Image: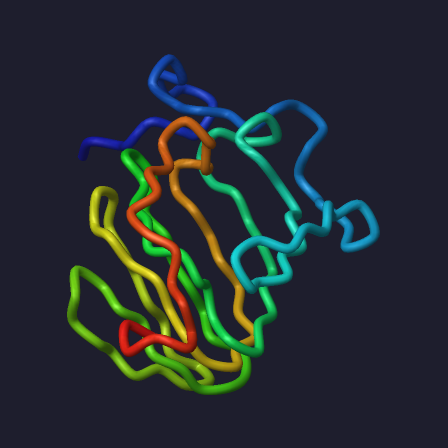
Length: 142
């Protein structure tokens, strides 16, 4: 009978570890910013953990910028509300308890009144984000 190695016996050279001591990110420590119509509570950044970053978002109108990210997938869990994600030009209605996963290099934006959790994996870095266009809610492109 072959036994698998115990956790301590495994080769750890291929395991990515979070920054020591950074496992819990209290709400009171979140950085709050407004960006393209979305109020963001940024709980963690790439400097905290390269594997993923977590943001709580609230919006009454949506994210009024079409963009894509070179390296990070964007994973949204819709907590409350309804809206539409526009991914690569196709519209996808969303509502509470839906999950949206946008792979790297796919352009997107969204509209609607939403409360949601965003996880980017690997963690979002500004240099990977590419602006396509600003969305004008008074235009037909909204």
